[in-house]
Amino acid sequence: MTDISFARSAEQAKNYVAGEWRDPAGEGEQDVVNSATGEPVGVTPFSDETGVNEAVAAADEAFEDWSALPVEERIQPLFELKNLLEANQDDLAETLAREHGKTLAEAKGELRRGIENVEVACGMPSMMQAGHLPNAAPDIDETAVRQPLGVFTAVTPFNFPGMIPLWFLPYAVATGNAFVLKPSERTPFTAMGILELVDAAGFPDGVVNLVHGGPDTVNALLAHDDVVGASFVGSTPVAEHVYETAAKHGKRVQAQGGAKNHIVVSDSANLEFAAEQTVSSAFANSGQRCLANPVAVVHDAVYDEFADRVVERAAALEVGDGLDEATEMGPLVTADHERTVREYVETGVEEGATLLLDGRERDSDLPDEGFYLAPTVFGDTDPEMTVAREEIFGPVLALIRAEDFDDALSILNRSEYGNAASLFTERGREAKRFRHEAEAGNLGVNIGTAAPMAFFHFGGRKDSFFGDLHAQGEDMIRFYTDETVYIERWPEE
Ligand code: NAD
Image 1 (cartoon, rainbow, N blue to C red):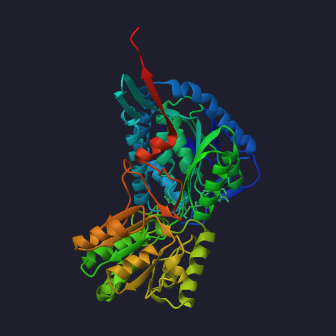
Image 2: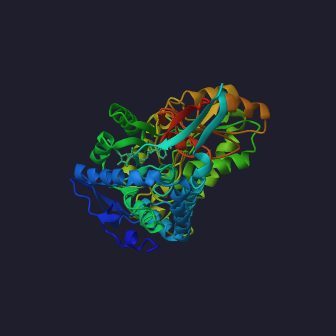
Image 3: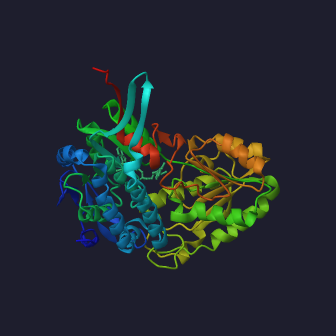
């Protein structure tokens, strides 16, 4: 089969182990709900230690032959996977939008970013080369080679169920490792769809595996003797837990955490453009993006005009079911998450921020079922307020007045997170200072959402990242390989 009909029709998420679909057996499960309608989509049963052991054993068994194949052969199924992902992009996007709630355009967009990682990993024959220096010392040649290590796992979040598994899977297998994916229990069917295409792409059984589950499943993977390394993307407390647990068990680990990113708006900025980009950054994916900029720090001289423009644009966003083509912003992922985001809005009001746009006032326009909150904007937010500091992960934007550029930079740098930041300016000097002084891993200048292409790494700092090598690009090759250096001398007989 070269489509995702199995994932689309399944009511219960299945593991994919050694090239077969299997029922996860364990305690606990998660209902998967269409967040636009409240209707059930299916169930994710959690895998226990036995399920994890089966997947790791399958990967471990596949590793020996897979790693011994020439890299040129290992990338052939990746070319096929790229074609299959493209051919099935619409069906995958629909599956994704249904279980997640984002719009079809957003779902297609994230799949495109995922496919870009497959494309980059197809360049592995060049990227895996490390270096060679003849006569590095008298009569001695030195050659560095990159070698795969064994079984890697990746534990991924709900908010980009199509893209984030593909930050890891293509690089892991192209470098010669075997791979076990543990996707979010809230969005399992997109992962199943991708694995259905992996199955059709021609990877040998066991090279790529999928296990569903919750925290116990993750902990079993992190403690497993045959797992050599783990990638994690999710909230900061769990990222810290994964980093510590994996390290305690002797694994290499990269753990990307939460975020609270800032946009700085200079008094020189093109305000219409800055407002358009800020609204898109804060409210796309209903604010459920680690690269969203839910805080805008605005120079006092242009604050009022900027606030007016932002509110006007945010109020005009069409909110509704992501599967409806006209929708510009979908619902939040679960009823629980909607409750949490609404509690944050109340906290903002209690702490004295001014509600410039109250998404709750549009409740009567929105479908009764489904987990909606319309765009909400706080003005005159103090940087110390909860809504300015904590990750809300919803459609809530906080505007902060800054006296000048230095003040704005200092507000941004006081954040405990450091995933991304953007500056809107027409002054080169401010842009230069921003590049040197803003403390975040992804920096945009006149860019609303600073998302690097797949051939650059995706870096976070401070509480947004635990580890050293990041996702995507060159860092992934280093994460998935060890470098050995051969030092050779052949004396004359
Ligand atoms: P989450 O931390 O709740 O879950 C992420 C993964 O961790 C899931 O697979 C889940 O099953 C697992 N998990 C949850 N609790 C666990 C525990 N106690 N022990 C072990 N594993 C556990 O995150 P989420 O709600 O799915 O995703 C949203 C978060 O992800 C936000 O904080 C967002 O900023 C972050 N995120 C970060 C990036 C980045 O690149 N830095 C990218 C996307 C999302």
